[in-house]
Length: 400
Image (tube, rainbow, N blue to C red):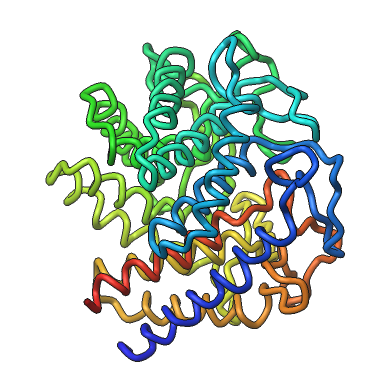
């Protein structure tokens, strides 16, 4: 098994450098307007006039910063500098604070709403950039975003975070992150990425206010978002009434390891001991969504027994980390075996060996959908790069 993990590390390292990050450096640079191109289609044709999304650009910042921190490759530092400069110049709202949701291709605000999800990812990117540069301006911007989330989004009466607000932090009727999401005020997805962002911020900014906020988020997941079946509850109203019964297998496995990471970074021993068995149970519950080929199905609606059998790129990446994490916590070989199965599925079906990067999704038979973007508002190098980096990092430390 140990030799298998060494091979896995080597293959992921090659995938990260040659197929994923190389693609973004060669294909996605906007040499006319700065930063990165907003969209590349399935035929690998860039659209230089596509709008630029805050989520994509914050994730690019995190990706190249994290890649440089682990590998020290100078070209990744150059990309991180490029990304941070563009993000701070164009996406940060200098008037009201926060992050613009969307810009036009020239960098002007197109949709100035304050989606808390986007603020969280910008914190995630800026904090990772600070970890490689010690750039105090980036840290200050991340702290300002944290303060904005706590001031405007946090529900001081009922707990939790409101999904979205207007440009100047007023209430909105339509709170949805995307068209497929329910229009509810408190969502698991946004809370998960606030958790992720606050965890990274706490590594470098040990304020009592942040400590309390991060601990509260961990406890919210234990009390509200994780169901008795160890799947995630996705949507709530203001008063924490559950809305719908969708299961998102990718979010389940992603949350399993991010939640444990948050407890570890926080350093609360009692909370770590509380989270650890939940982490293992969540990974175990996700086996319900694993197909016979090792791929992870997208979603399930239990009430209607409606299973979305497409296999998107990002749940497969999160399965790599989530199952490896569960294996190291439990010693259960079923988790290590699934780690290898997830990677085999990715290699066999998701990696685009002609153009580079990964396909957005394949169907149950492993056939890609060639109408999906290769890069765009949601299609980014964050999930797959992070999976490679996490496994590389963990195996490197374990085999020193």
